[in-house]
Length: 158
Image 1 (cartoon, one colour):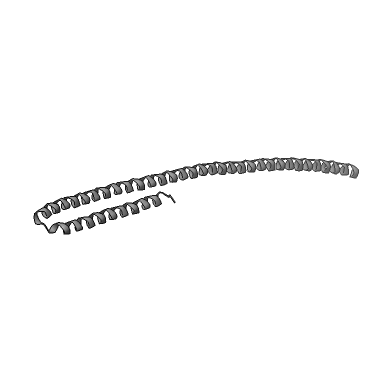
Image 2 (cartoon, rainbow, N blue to C red):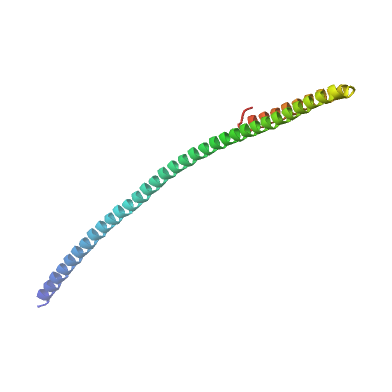
């Protein structure tokens, strides 16, 4: 009975070892499959992140371009506003000097009328008229020149 028991034990041991080997093979196969699945899942996650980053980068580029365009339009609008303001101010100054010259002419006319009636006052009025007219014109031209220079600098001209 010893041989028979030994064979039965060997047979049982053989089946046990075969079952154990089969169990290890199944476990190893499932482990490999799980690792492949995890690797694929990891690759999909990384690809998704990379695609999201690309999309965001493209959106950022578009936004930066739009901001640059808006800034350029703002600069152009500022230049136009500065030019229009300077033009309006020049017109205002012209009108002021027009009224100043007109007042000076009226004063000159009044002085001439007074001169014809007073005699000696004419020579001093003539001196005053000549001096005042030149000073008014010179001041007006100086102001116009200063304003033109300011407009030129504000519009970026060298």
